[in-house]
Amino acid sequence: MDYSSEVQKAIDSIENNLYDDIKLYDIAKKSHLSEFYFHRLFHKVTGETVMGYVRKRRLSKAAYDLKNTELTVLDIAVRYQFSCGESFTRAFKKMYEITPYEYRKSNKVINLYKKINVFSKHNVSMSMAA
Image (cartoon, helix red, strand yellow):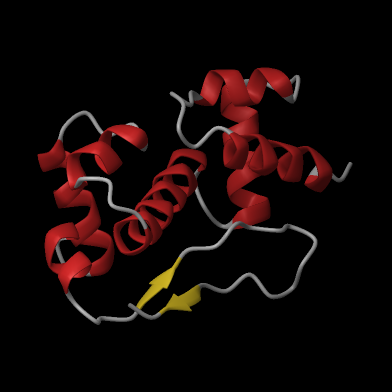
């Protein structure tokens, strides 16, 4: 049985709730699957773990906000469910090799992690110029 449509529905739900506290249990429950099975299925279809995908999308949206809003770095961190500014800065630097503060002030171009479409053969990151 092909569960690609269930995975895409979960991705759409994640995208609509990036500001909220997202739990694997809740996503799996909407798909009427166990957490364990849903996690394996999601990874098989997307090549990503569920929470890894959530983190990458949040950081990508945060990078966009850093360049396109006047929100403080702490406000952006809180918006995307990071417990504190330090954890946000560590995660951002790990993904983009630059701190949020440095990125906001720079003209650096980074590859933003875009939403996965399981039915598309071209799931690539998009570049964002500062």
